Image 1 (cartoon, rainbow, N blue to C red):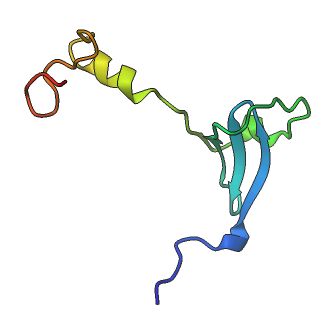
Image 2 (image 1 turned 135 degrees about the vertical axis):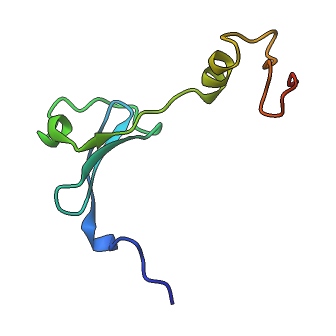
Length: 88
């Protein structure tokens, strides 16, 4: 039987607002992670939003890949893709 990496009793969802969730993963491990289902804004945010140990952000992978491959894309095709040839 496998031992879980974290104890489910140590996790707590503290708050949600503006596309993010504020979570506590035990002790002082408070982090902010994106959650596309959170479409509201909480105007009474707890202070942990300002003191979180880490904040994860969502990036658009398609735009990142286009920028990484010579700074542009030609009609949606990536130049010099992962296999060294133009992608479709």
